Image (cartoon, rainbow, N blue to C red; front, top):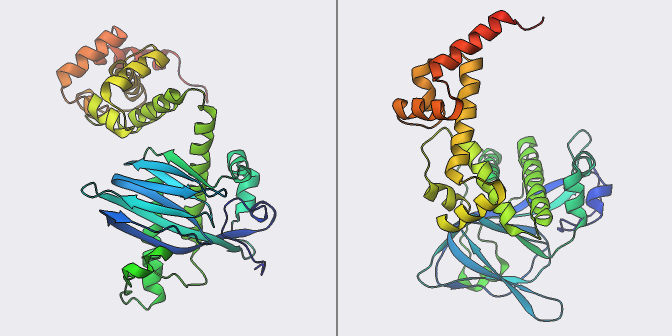
Length: 336
């Protein structure tokens, strides 16, 4: 393993020229309320993910001024190493977050490295070269799920490293909280293959989110439409309403309806119906799922309503469509 000394910055050139991987220093779930943290900095990169509520993060600029970032549920802020910042949470408006702090260390031979990842994933390489003291990004839950899995694995590895006994979590006194270390002290020299794999997933997802944000900078509404369509694809098998879709992308339903129609020439409801009917056509054609059960696979609770939608969309009933597809296959069997 390389003995080279790395900094905690995500944008250091060495990540793209040397074989290294992540080292996690702290993590925690925390509910804040009526809290004001002093400005502080540390030699590690930090991700604060807002699970619920809202908060404000002030970032100090080199000239002594500051920039303010207001974060709401479903957003996260990535702070690069050694960037002075502070957290503020209003009284009566609590904020629950998941926080992870990490740096970097040399990788042993055969282990996946960030350099290799950047070589294979163009968006990751681009991301690592676009240095920024901080960035605020929206998340359609992928980043949150990866972070949860990462924290769980760090917890489990910590338990194993301590012979299966419970680890005592030291609650840092208020006068020490400026160090922002209300977390487990992770001292294990080897944090495991699964931890490295989850970090790679996290880095790829953040890089892609940053890329999408950059590409859509002239028109922020396009990013919301993309996120809406992704949510529909992931949830079309269950009963979802316009209010659920709007909440998933942190927009008012009326505003989302308007910008979605501007970009797609369809209402969100029409677009969701299209996705469901196309999925139903695929299931009728390529599976043996009983027709009576197809409606459940595409998130339409009523069979009668599903049959009505399908006929309106295709001009065929589900029974007629499956029969037609079966005749087509028997007449033109696939080539071997």
